[in-house]
Every structure is written in structure tokens, then in C-alpha cells.
Length: 449
Image: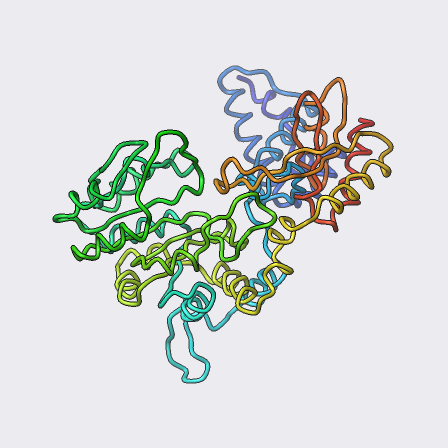
């Protein structure tokens, strides 16, 4: 290959300063383009050495633009118009203003593990325990980075190498392909399965307690069992295990601190209600029905929580300062009785149908097309299974619904809708009222594209 083939390649600055890359420079920064251009030209020289033709300048500009489009970037803001409140792919519960402000306060140096009064080191989650006691009624509490971590810590810290007794009907998959038996195996505690998939009795637990280290109960937060089914009351299992000196842990999952009715059709077991049933430890999520940032909470008897706090896994599973700041701000809202007004999830859940219909109608009026329909919303996030929420949506009929949904996704900010019965549906329940104008603007652009 002659040197002329290489000489025909543009210099880095000439490529980066090409007029068609002006928007890319503004979006990504010139230094990022310089790095990407150097990598592209290095790869191009290697291709030429293997016999490839020298690409033209427009071809290199297009290749550089493509490479920038797939490079890692911060998360993009999304307007959730799907009607699914706890949309796992979209980040589950949105943060409240208080949580965001607390994170901003902690972004620099802060008293994470420092007592400003004494000048001595202090536990980083010292304030969480008091807030969990106040909001759940438990004797003690602690936090790790998510609920799967809470289950793992509970299994490792309470059962250790001893078997964990669990009903076959509770061996669930928690999402993303992760199954409870896999987590149990990672903890070092072998499974001791009892009962059958659909029916487990108190005698099944009683016969399996000898030599066991823990009983694990999994609340039906993300699945429903119907038909010929049976299982003992939680309190009866706790009483039975206590006679044998075996602790009982409840994986409550969704973590509601308040009764979700009348917004939801059926009651959900709340954490304070579960605490009153006497479990040694209860674990639950922070970013589901609690409406806060991702976290895994553990509450229960003081000696049990102390043992888990002292376990070596606790440090590996702990929260960072930003997560803790948001957690403390969210729990403080519950303590002050302000959660239903200040948490976006609970506020969205409580919106009356009349308000939802008025907002969808306003979208319709703003864009001049679509039909306002009654439809179901959903809690999502593996919570409240088979409990649809009465909702409203703006339905748009188009010959190419997939194209319209894609165009909405590519707006700034992105608007995520969904297709049902060949119509594009946008649900106001999951859209913040402050985002209504952005939804209407995105629709106007998308429908004319």
C-alpha cells in the first residue's frame, strides 16, 4: 500500500472542524471529538493496510458521527406517559424535591461519617435507624443498597451455613432473571424446601425446623396464587419457629409504609402492619411503594438488626452518601406526615379520574387530534399484581403507530408512550403536571414528522 493512500486521510483538526460536525462539537465537546477522530483515523489506517480503499472525507464525517452516537453518555431525561407508575426500565419511583436537594447538599464534603459536635468518627447510617423506628414501629432498622442485598445479608447473617426453610410457593424470580434460589446459594445457606407450589401448611414448617438457621417468607408482592391454594398465616409461622429458636425473615418486597387505598382496589400489607406480626426481620424496597430512591431496608428486633449490622457483608452492601442523603430526606417526609403531598409516586397515585381526564383533554385541545379514553394504569415494578388502576389516556389513531412512538422517544425530552389496539396511548397519571406542555409540544412535532 503506497504512502499516498495514507496522505489522503485528513488531519485530525480538519476532520473535527468539518462544518457538518458543528452540532456534535456543541453536544459532546471538542475534546471528545478529537479523541474519537484519532481513534477513527487509527482504525482507518489499519483497514487501509489490510487492503481497504481510502474513505472520502464525507464518509469519515459520517463514521465519526455514528461513533459519537453510540458512545456512553449520562442518562437522558424521560417523560413517562406509559401509565406504569413504577416503570423499572425508566427508573421506578421519581425522586421528590427534598431528596434531590439533600443530594445536592451532600455532593461536596459532608458529615457522612463525622460527628460535628465531638469531632469523632460516626456511623454513616446513624440517622436511618431512628427514622425507620419512627416510621415503621420496629425496634431497630438499617439500610443497604437494594432489597436483593437486604435478602442476601439476612440469609448470610442469620442462617449462615445452616439451612433456610422456605415454601416451594415462595421460590420466586425477582426480575432480570435473578431467582431467589440463586441468591440463597450465594449466601451460603442451603435451601430446605417445604410444602408444594400451591399448598404449604404449618405442619410442613414445623417438621423442617430441626437444625434450621432461618425461615424465609416471601410476600406475594409480585405474583398471585389462585385456585386450590393454602398457606399458614405469617403470625402462626413466627410463633411456631420461635418455639424452636429459629428466626423468621419476611421479604415484603414492595415496602408500603402507608395504606394505598382508596387509590388501589385491594389493601397491600404495609411495613408497620408486618412489624406487629413479630418477625425477627423484615426487608423491603425503597424505590417501590415507599416512593424513594433505590434502597433495601431491614427492620425488626434490635438484637437481630445489630447482628446484621456487624456482619462483614454489610460494608460491601452499604449505601453511598448521595443515596443516603436521598433516603433520609424521603423518610423524613413520612416522619413529618408530608409523604402523600411531597412524594411524586404517592401524589400520582392519588390523582382523581376527573383531574386525569381534564389533563388528557387539555393535551387533545393543544394538539387538535386524538381521543380521550378510559383505560387502566398500573403500579408496575413487581407490585400490586392484578390490581389495575382506573385511568385515562389520550389515544391517537395513526397508520404507523410504531413510527409515532419512536419519534416521541427521540424528542428532547424523550416522551415514552405505548401502543394498544393499534393506537398510541399517552397516560397523564405518570406525567408530572409540570410536563404537560412538553408532552403537547412533542406530540405536535411527532405527528407532523
